[in-house]
Length: 491
Ligand SMILES: C[S@@+](CC[C@H](N)C(=O)[O-])C[C@H]1O[C@@H](n2cnc3c(N)ncnc32)[C@H](O)[C@@H]1O
Image (cartoon, rainbow, N blue to C red; front, side, top):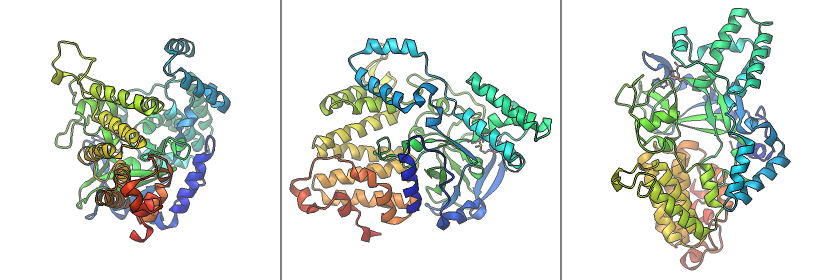
């Protein structure tokens, strides 16, 4: 697995990495390519097919590893003019310069560049699949026809596919014409109707080590983010209380139970980011945009309408907001975060003046959580690790009360909490956070302390705190903090 991570690291450094024939399933996990070891497929009258446990499974059972049928990375969906790396850099610089001073210029630029183009990533995947079918028509009969939507009734219940881009539509049409040379016309008609929906309703996002603070930086793996269509994983249904977590290394996807599961229970993943699962059904459904309503486990809400709600439909503190905040100097940033926290908690605008404070619509709970993390990072950077630790503790509380069990973001937060506690010289607290971080990491990712240190090595290299002094320096004796908190002999 460590060799695989080395290969993934190398791929992530390449400008516009290509997928991923180089990444093969390591021998030690190859038995997991067989999904029927611990699970079986069953039919449910409402949800269709789904995976069910065939035996009692303890938390941390690796169920499945899968290689995709096709995958597309986000960089492949960049608009053509920004595909030139030189132009990209120039564009980035412009953005940075413009941030505060030249709002008017920003507006002018927006006028000239037009609206954001629609994402075409699903259609890029569709084109890849059609190209693959030209060489390997059995893929349709053996695999793709097994995936939802399988029947004409299922198909008829879905909204029509609308291609967001004329050029892509022409490409799809041309590939369908070429397919008519190798497949019967009625099969090609079937493919043209069903394949866009198969893509739309089965693809999974794929991100490597995305919980790490180093993820968006030069040593992170954000260049490998994309979407992929998998065969057996496509049969996992959605639950807002999932008992299965998934994680990726490149395009290899791993599925693991996050809690004890009893024989006969359904095994579900979440189709939503875990940090929005604690929101109301209205908000969850606004983001899910699927052909079913996610109303909570206890009720069957297939097709049910959920009431409209005040407040944003999506998290406000997205990557752009976070990048903008991280571009500020620390003191300015803390003020800006405090201001945003007030809004996020509904304590300040944009609701009407007459509105009671308690009635003001808040943002998502993960907005507050992410702002608190940014503030903790900032306080650590300016040497206030005691105050940072209080915020890391609040972030731990969020992950343990609002997220599914053993969520990987809890590992990152416990790791940072341990490092902040060590920085304050509080060895007991540091050790406690460190142990839980390692235990949770091992449950989800396996590989003991070695693999934890390997996955976290770029985070350990970040200079997030000043050089330790006082009790922390006495504890460390010149060693790097991770050596003290996660020594190799603890495995
Ligand atoms: C990725 S497929 C999952 C496997 C699918 N059930 C099948 O029969 O192949 C996604 C589709 O399954 C159904 N589905 C998944 N989770 C569901 C849920 N919680 N409630 C109702 N339908 C669900 C929806 O039709 C959705 O578009």
